[in-house]
Amino acid sequence: MTLSRRTLFATTAAVAAATTGTATAGTATAATGSAQAAPGAGRRLRTGFERLAEDGYALLRGRRVGVVTNPTGITRDARHIVDVLHADRRVDLIAVFGPEHGFRGTAQAGGSEGRHDDPATGLPVYDTYLKSGPALAGIFTASGVDTVVFDIQDVGARFYTYIWTLFDCMEAAALAGKRFVVLDRPNPVTGRAALGPVLRPEFASFVGRRPIAQAHGMTVAELARLFNGEFLSPRVPLETVAMTGWRRSDFHDASGLPWVPPSPNMPTPKTALVYAGTCLFEGTNLSEGRGTTRPFELLGAEGLDGRWAAAANEAGLPGVRFREAYFAPVFSKFEGKTVGGVQLHVHDRAAFDPVRTGIALLVTARRVWDGFAWRPDHWIDTLTGSTRVRTMIDAGAGTDEVVGAWQRELAAFRATRRQYLLYG
Image (tube, rainbow, N blue to C red; front, side, top):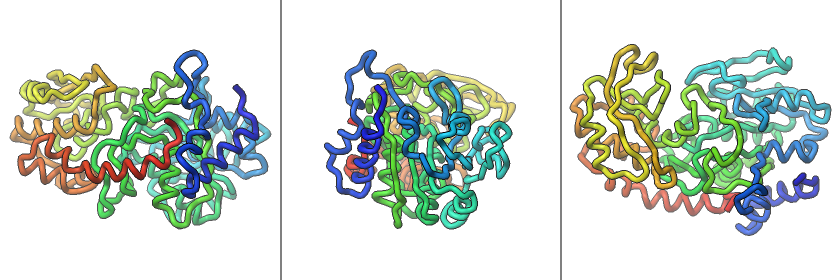
């Protein structure tokens, strides 16, 4: 069904009201319309960009537009939205802003493409990576835009940096007096629940600017509403274009959308499914599978053997089994060396809890391998948002004890999160 201009503006008005804290939960639900539709042929998902395009880009008319995006900002037929917008005379697209890995995705982890002109469109591309506050506001001002549009696929974990690019760009847009529009996309690992510890403010970094749960269970538009309502001062003039046809229980394959790796080590939706837990191994001396075809599904180190898989399986974690595995990373930790460890096989993704699984794997690895060590810089504390996980595991705590320690703060975050949800 084509979205009328009146319906689109009613949606964004309801979202804006909810962001300022004046809308009820019922208003937010009404704003998403068919997000509650029954499964079947009539429940085709439409992304925020698809709804914007169906309405003839009404939200962007008469505006000088810049887009924050990366290779995931594509249409259903795999065209990039920047290429689509650039070719449409109804949109005055004058700039592109690239995050970590770059707008076209040419850079590895911890890198970006820098300031350049895009060869395909001739548009100026500005680098946002690790830029924030007045410096980023100055980039928005220098670009000449008055409206900043965000469209990037997230994977649902606090330490995946694109949501903090969103936060930094919102903050900078507020400082620069720019309007901010978020085009929503699905959370590929569902939006059923928030899981894991909540970041403590003293551990804020680019892998966690503000106190949200390790697996937040939100879409980027919902996060934008939460950021604006809870963390930004001054707030940014925010408009979101919600999806239709998405349910909180949907995994990526229900969307009908092509999967584009959001970063080089996020090759499949299965990677995203485990990432919120197994990324914690970045904070150890074990390989998290970078340099293999199964990053974050393969974990290991020299000296580990089948005892780890046996111990992990004995933990009885829901929805997942562990296979003894051997692999030789072609880059990153243990480059060119054969290491032993485990491969995760998720057989019931609805029951699978990535954060509990990650903690259980840390606990069992430390128990069966005397070579286990944390990274000297205590990166694990940055990832988990406090010293608690590291110190409790070092003290001999089991999985249930560690997971139980964050339940009160998680319950508080879930209560806050609820008021910014757009679907279900």
